[in-house]
Length: 136
Image 1 (cartoon, rainbow, N blue to C red):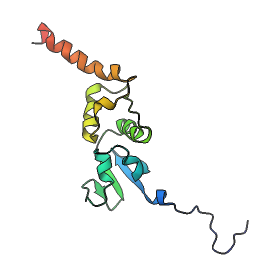
Image 2 (image 1 turned 30 degrees about the vertical axis):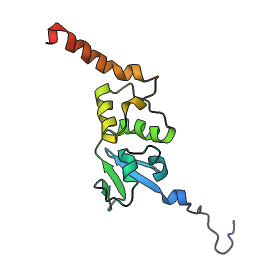
Image 3 (image 1 turned 60 degrees about the vertical axis):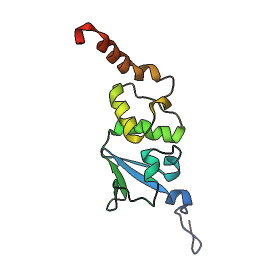
Image 4 (image 1 turned 90 degrees about the vertical axis):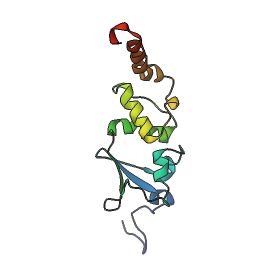
């Protein structure tokens, strides 16, 4: 195949590609677009898209934002930004997921109804134990 002068096999960089961000969460790298992270305002990930703010999470040497958090749970968090649906993992205890939601600035009320009973199970158990005479 012969290319005409000035032609390239590489795709042209679109404006969307130039807005890609790399997030390193617990040593696992995730790539997404700034526009994706802006879909849920007033959250930690929306704040890192603000280029006018000097983020302490940004490492200019690597070009990444680093967060020392649970990478498996972050999969669910990032998927929420992409789809608008927040599902709670069944393999993680409720308090851990609750802590991660709080860190990222996401309201637990955003959890999808299909996941709510499993997520709430830890609180229900705590309330039951707190009311039990054995644990007082």
